[in-house]
Structures are given as structure tokens and as C-alpha cells.
Length: 449
Image (tube, rainbow, N blue to C red; front, side):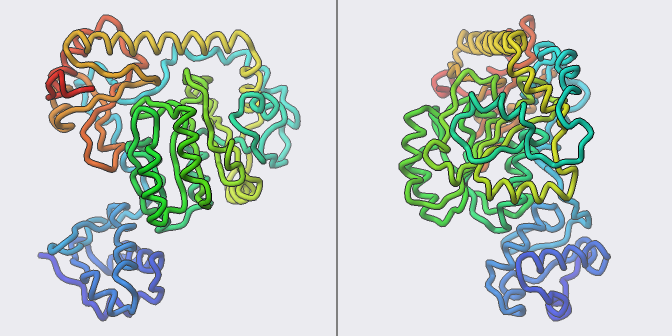
């Protein structure tokens, strides 16, 4: 039997009536067992009145606990305690890959093919030759790596910082520069872990519609008028849809952002595996653009390296936060990547990998087209496929031993789609996979464009 928490008892313990205070004290009481699992919490309006705060404050606190899967419910049914574990988790990302034992073609993770990665043996030998090896000096980025990346960087940045991978850079950036409740514009759909990262800090996510050229300027203007303070997008090959931001679209977005103070965050997750150039908004707004480029997919995921550029003031704050931990990124890794950027053989391997990924993608698209499903040939390690029902598509494909990523993991709106990885797809299975995708789509051939 469930019980309703005594309002007076609860309010007396909430001595800090801020969003953070309400969420933190409530989580502590649940963890200590003073509020048992199954207990109904007071209504938002009643608790707000008892604390002398606005209902929005209580709703924001409940939102944080819901994202951590501690409480559940809404509307007339009220809110109740559903768990006592308040450890932050990337819930969307952790669900990827749990598709059962009968999966024979795992097309969910858009990861690079290990057989197409550059040979790291010589790179690691070069890595141990790095200057200041074994030093505890916390340099933001090694000089060899900085000299290697600057010629190809998409704008003249103020400062640079090496980090342990693209998502590590994004997480550190968000943890440092964003506040709970901050209104953040982000593409819809977007990368799964970006949504997890924003959920973890309690940001208010504002979904931004896109087309084949990137974020829609008109939609961006509308969201900026609603008080957004930051804009996150993928300026090159998009991880979910495969689209890329054109030069013309970048110029149009710059016109919308002109005259605002909105922080701009660019996440270039695919890096040098993209066939497109980067038209960074840093060309227009270097004083408020933070640009992240990952080197994992092109050079090797175990290198765990990305570079973040941006205003010196912002990067100093990010570096200060990093000093709670290691404080700097391995100089061996930085030296190794710097050497590979300048190594002709490595660059040739990357070009060959891009060509093979494009061939695999086009083979699958061609097989689908023969079956009446016309999808655009974009870029990246996956294809974006609209479906009538994600649930039907996932069940249908799983029954045939195929796993894909459901759109719910990386979308905010209601569009139904699946993401199908092509990075390691086998040529001898393309026809059977295309048959299964046709059945899973649930759409007429005229419905997919």
C-alpha cells in the first residue's frame, strides 16, 4: 500500500527552497529511507505554497529527480518515489546494445570498423618521444599537436584544449559553463549522449528542427526569442541523420545569431572521416563559439583524443574544473595523433576508409531503392530511415537477428525513425538486411523521401 507524505513534515526539512536544494534534500531523504519507495509526494502546488516558492521551482526539482529515475508520475496521478539510487547515469546511451543473444547483425552502434583504422604501432613509438614526458606540468595542449591541427582548424580560435575524446569534451564543457534550468537549443534529433549530458545537469532542452542542410534559421530565431542562452549543434556530418551544414546555411544561422549573446557549441564528432568541410560559426563569433573535434573515429577510439577551441576565458574555466581530476590529456597520445596528422601513409588510410564507408552505405541504399525505398545518400557511418512505428521496426528486425538504433534514443520530438549503421555491414548480407528494413519500415515506397 502506498502512502502520501506529510506536507508539513516534508516542508520543514526543505530548508533550502531552491531547485538544487529541494532536489538534493529530497534525494537524501529517499536514500536514507525516510521517504520509502512507493510514497506519494505532495502536489507541486501544495508544496510550492508551503515553501513560499513558485510551482515552477518545485517542478524543476521534480524534473531533476525524474531524470535520475528516483521519482515518477505526473498529472492527476501525482508523483511518487520509484527508486532510491540517485547516481547520475547516461540512461539513453546505456540502453544501446542490449538486444538479446539472437542478434547476428548489430547495426545499432555507428562505430568505425577496426580493420579500417590506421596502424598505431609507429604512432605510439613516436608518442613516447613527446617533449616534457613524465612532467606534471598541466599544459592545455601540447605544442606538437597544436601545430598539427591549426592549419586545418575551421576558424582562428583564441585558445585550444586537448581532452579525452569528444564526449568528454562536451561533458566537461556543459558541466563547467551551463547551470541547472538553463535553456539550451539543440538539434532534433541529436547525439544520444548529448541529451544524457544535458539531462544530467538539469538543462531545459529546446528542440530545433533541421533539414538536409542543417538547423532551420527560422526555427532557431523562434527559440532564441524564448530566452535560450546556448545553442548546440553538429556543424559537419550529423551522427543521426548524416546531413551536413552547408556554407549558405551557416551564413543564414549567423544572421539569426547576430546581435544575441547566445553561447555557440559545435560538436564535430566524426572529424576527418567526414567528406565535407566545416563552416564554423566561429568565423563570425570567435568570442562565443566553442568548437569540439573528435579524432577517435578517424585515428582510433583507444587514443581517446579530441580538441576543444574557444575563448580563453571559457577554456580557463574548463581547465580549472579538469584540475579536480587528471588535469591534462596524455602527452603521449597527443604526440601520436600529431604525428599521424602529418604522416602521408596515415592520411592515405583515412581516405581509403572514407571511400569504403561510402561504398557500403551506397550498396545498402541501392538495395533499398530496388525495393522502392528511396533514401538520400548523405554521409557518415549510418543511414537515417523514417518508419511508421519504431516499436514495430525494432521487433520486426530483432526477430530477424538485426539490431538498429531506435530514434527515441536521440530525438526529442515525435518523428519515428531508426538509425542503421553501415560501418561494418557485410556485403553478402545486404540483400537480406534490405528485405528486413523494407518490412520494418511499415511505409509505402512513396512515403520515404
